[in-house]
Amino acid sequence: MDTLAITNREIVVGANTTWAEVEEIARVSLPAFLEFVQRFGSPQIRNVGTLVGNIANGSPIADSLGLLTVLDASVELVSPRGSRRRALNGFYTGYKKRIWRPTS
Image 1 (cartoon, helix red, strand yellow):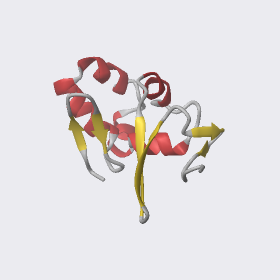
Image 2: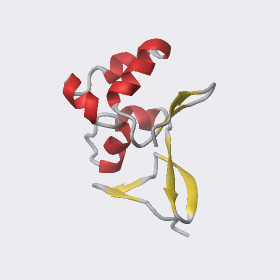
Image 3: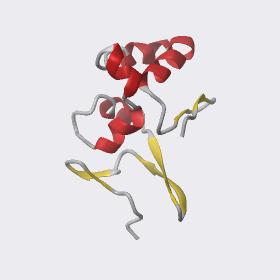
Image 4: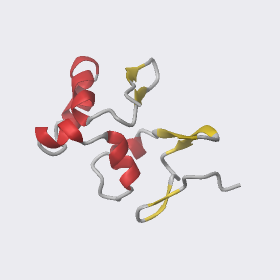
């Protein structure tokens, strides 16, 4: 849950990773993304707020959702039954409503 890594094709952010930690890795490896992250709240908010919390909240005005949608980001949903990936596009079904379980 504390994962924060950059591979050739993706940035992997665990559920406990704060915006401040994302900001630090962006400072080194993703300067264009750094400019985006620094617009989120105050340093105090970035020290406790998480990207995953922003996604899980499901508000259409969440700071990260616009960029993540355009980047065609995905989420990995994990439960005792296993894990699965879901594109962020289509993850939300309405205001603060998400698809947590498979629909089939």
